[in-house]
Length: 625
Image (cartoon, rainbow, N blue to C red; front, top):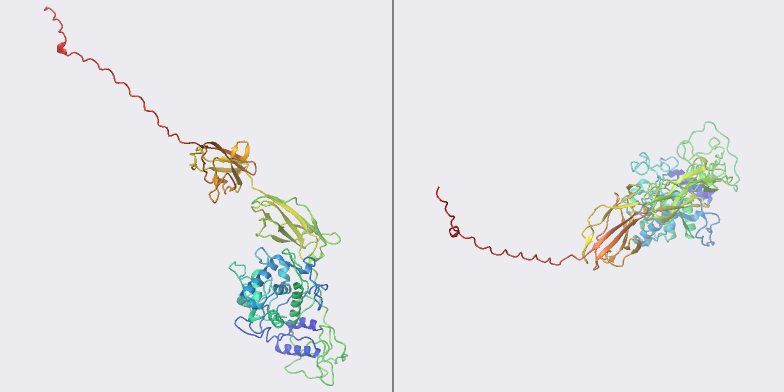
């Protein structure tokens, strides 16, 4: 009875008068008391302590699911939980990592707090079902905001807007936000940037977990002390039932947990909010009765009323109108002050309609999943996968289940990613119970990895698909220059080697190229001597495998050096896809021999002097005519 009353009182007792009556009723029934709303969960004040009367969540609704009945959460029974087994003990990987990192951070900055990560896990379970079963991206941010109900005073606290709708999208009233359910005004003080992205995001599990850790440690609390532990939890949500629920999960997680893939955590069903099996009482405006009714028949003192009903005052010699049965405040009467007894004011007790149980999530009706085709996923590095798995969800009777959430996860050494740079994604089954893996792009890491498919929140057999990333290819290599590649012994080749790779006539970007100083055209082994490259330490190497063409398919080889050998050597370039290019490297000693001088031309012999004209005998004169 006390537990049921605790659920209803948590958000119904919003005024001092109602709270006072409630506490009195609890005392009369010897049930556990509640923390008055006027004082909050922690009376010790400091600049680093939440204000009195406040709570991290604004006392928003929370999940009331408890650990399995077969769990060792009874006094005197504490065998450890198995490493794997119970689905409820599984915590999504990213969420679990955030809790443990927050514990380490606080242990370094505030070792006296002695915060255990299992406490964060218990609060995360109760507040959001571990971020809705771990529906977070690679950075730990929820795929969609997790929002509590509008805190407008109807069934819950009345908190006018404090953030302009920046976090909760509501410019009128505040709402609790994120996997740890901070209200915006509390987040403004306690928000953290745990993942170093420059933002304090209440929907990021890393930021939220660290904020919760620091909030719980406020005021110099030592959480290894039971009184401080209780105060810390009650400062988060001022409800004794909340305290008991969190402690039950805290003890459960302390006995063992195991990691599960993101998006596959067990989703809570029960909630303290509207539409659940524990519905809060909403205050109503008193209405003057229009017609007197007969007093109710006195109830037997030993027989309690149905939990959750509103018993009417029973006439008695001592206190007409006093509470009996279930400890709920009596109905309000017209006018101020204490209602006067009399036959005109009591009303016949009525039993409210039985709370409706919410329909189970669609995923809860799934009995198994099966392959529905799609072919083996294969893609070239950097390209999209053309073939992806298709999966069908089916019920116990074998019928397709529409609307079930399936988790697709990448497992193994791979840098392939789903759209949005994610390693996991949740896909809802459509017509025929079918769900196809979301768009997937291969990274540069080649080889096999696994695409794993599970049912969100269910420990059912999984499906594993082997996916393969093949290297980028080129079927042709061509040198871009035509200069002879020559060098002297023990020197550097004057011209660099530049090549262009193509595949089926198109530019082949990002193709891995292997360069080898070969011994012969048909010999794949490297030559033990002759030209060489240099490694990072400057040592000679004659094979390079970490070469890759650029976006234009171009590659400039590192500098090439010669040793003291002369001759003609071969450089072989090869790629995936069959491209081969062999180049000649010539090492020769420069010709430094002097060219013999041409023999001198012999001088022409001396020519005898021609006799002077006077020495020449004169021609005989002709006889005169």
